[in-house]
Length: 182
Image (cartoon, rainbow, N blue to C red; front, top):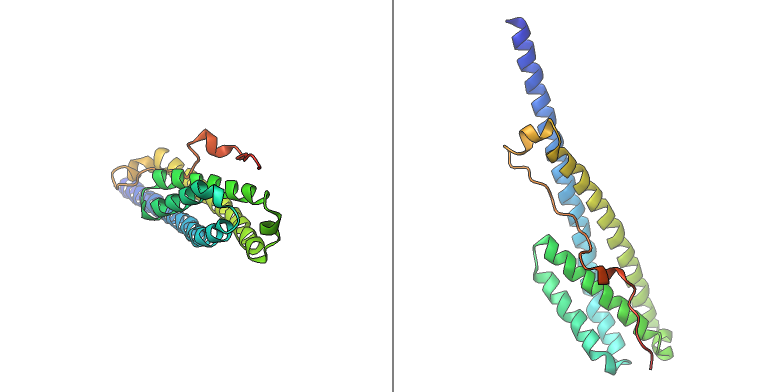
């Protein structure tokens, strides 16, 4: 009877330990997503400033400017991760296209406001990339626990589900855009 009691206590302790690990990992994923969200909001705040700065010099690129602005609005309104990731990838590509377009305008490249915006955008893109890697690492760890024995014995009945990665789905978004100069 004593051995059975000890085994039950050990199983209970192991169950609590596994549950606490799952909760910690799920919270790490949520915190990592929050970090990405902060950087995406920062990027969203830079977009109108960059668009208005470039607009004064590059009237013929109105389609790109409008597309980036529209993508920003869609991303801000999208709560689902896979859709948001796709929109953010398109924003990233569009912003880089705007920067490439700016290379055709020496007076724009010399504009202090544009250079500051470009530096802020570069820093924000670097922060998004870092936050994305951290988030995906947290998701990988959490998903491994949720799908591995013995954690899955508690994860599934308690409603722990695998999280989505923040990844590029569109192969074209991986390619650096090229823009024909006038």
